[in-house]
Image 1 (cartoon, rainbow, N blue to C red):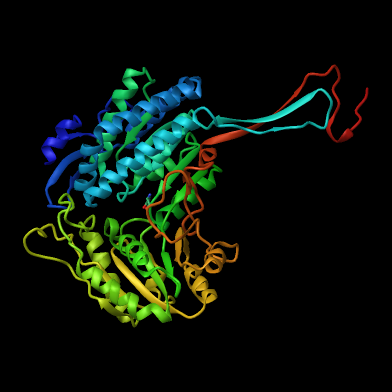
Image 2: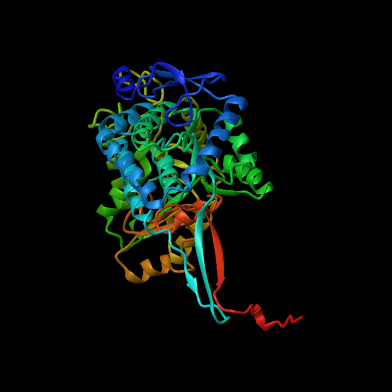
Length: 509
Ligand code: UN1
């Protein structure tokens, strides 16, 4: 499996993880071996960047920006259109590689590549827009308007759980906006990044895109810190834990750079007494066990009306008993492995804390062993009845642990939903218009995403994606998220024969 896919993407079993586009630099840092959580086999070994390697890449990117920004935006969009075509051609293989290296189900691996294709389409359209406003000047013979210019280097720090889609949300928009990108993928999933670099490099070569527009830096926390502190990088877009985001945000803020943070979630679905319970079941189960609970949008909490609590929890338990856990490349399975043993330990630790803090398990968890589970990364999705105030419930555990809790009034349910440090995604299941609108009102959900009658995960790329509070406040992908990748300039042009001052100030001499 691994060898075939490596060949398709031109990846050597041991290769540099540092590139400025078509050119692969000698990487002088330590080597990372990517091991699949599916079967514990080594996929490839990737050499990381030292500070010197990194500085070399930044220098090439700086030069590339001077050229790339002069390309008309629709011409840059045409390059992105071709990347979308290349991704369509590679959807099957890249989707499989995502599934194999990260562990998500094959359907979700394909879905991730589809998300990349979708953002390419969106970016192509945007490349003919990127519009500013015009305003009426208070002075005669004057015109005032605003325009948007590229920023320069966009650094992209991505996480293992969406190893390629989140990079593409950032890079496709950054590119049509006229920026150049340096991507630091997760150390846990470097091979999918190499595959993307190869796909893009071919398109860039065919279009004579300057070297340095699409850069890759494989590295650990050090590389992230170099970027966060680097004044040559005006924008750092980082996806990952709240702990990481606080460090990046502080370092970038200290130099008054810009950061775009997409951090942890603690997403809840409110299941009302007026919910369609069959529909709610699908939303809740997919939200909780999809990507083995390792999406930032995963459903972690169900806040259930007391009148339907017992019947809904019974439905959930029945659905969980039918889940097939195993090799994610086998499409019969719903749930694949966690990313690594450290994630399994965090899952076990959370289960222990749930018990200590007074929770009781409706569906028990545990690590699976035996044939097919040799990697030690397969765990049972579990459900615990808890109180929202438990310390463990207030934290995001990146694993398929679902909390259930009861409510009596909608006010109470909304207060519980909001009473966590994170603010990414939220949902209500109800057929009652008043309840739905209250949930969406300014006294309702405090999250960046609030849905009615769909779950918390699986956002489309057309909307702005991101959240409030400890989720970091950034917005990526659709709507006007492109503005984060550009600087706004206000221009006032005087075409009259005199120089009147604003605010009517007289200054004669
Ligand atoms: C993430 O988990 O970092 O909404 C991104 C979703 C996906 C993106 C998740 N479209 O679940």
